Image 1 (cartoon, rainbow, N blue to C red):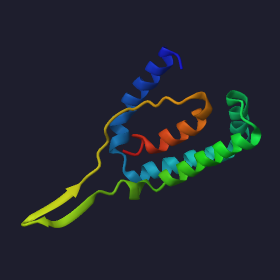
Image 2 (image 1 turned 90 degrees about the horizontal axis):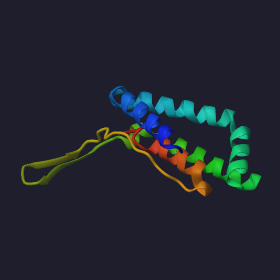
Image 3 (image 1 turned 90 degrees about the vertical axis):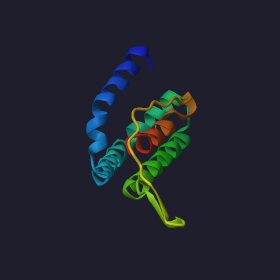
Image 4 (image 1 turned 30 degrees about the vertical axis):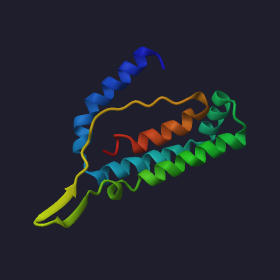
Length: 130
């Protein structure tokens, strides 16, 4: 990506972050289900682009696409993934708990060979869930 594109993407993500971090996790899961639906609807085009841009065979590109869909499907379980943990009486008169909070914007970089797969892993598993 060019520096201007990266800056624009980071700026847009930072602008969207406050509202997204207040969005209930069930609603976030619905967004991921829609993302999966759109990916499936455009699967032929996406597999073609993976083949063209990464030099993969159609079968390899389809495998990358399928793995990406699996990652999105896993992330659709966001409500479960976002659950904290509690341990009652971890010590004398001591209980313990953990809570997950949104942390901000991230950017991943992937080699050309794995650019599609990396993207579909980052999008649903990154801060879009947290």
